[in-house]
Image (cartoon, rainbow, N blue to C red; front, side):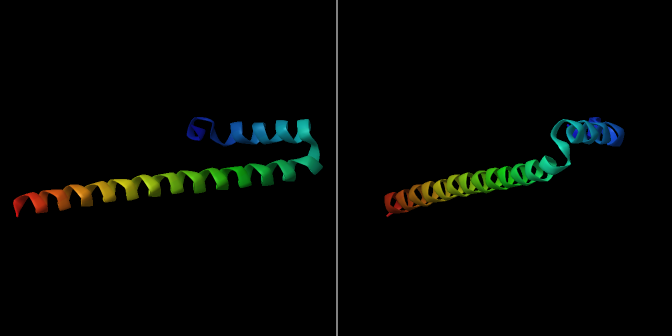
Length: 71
């Protein structure tokens, strides 16, 4: 998505943000945005790990069940 904006468009967006929010507020907004993205990535990673664990557990149960049926 950002690849279609290009460097000039990105600079324009930053200048507009600077004008709207001012030089004192911009670092605070950047910090808050970074923390939000970090938390989102962590949550997504945790969710993916949980799903992987569930799939592994289900595979183990199926394989154990098949092993017990063969005996």
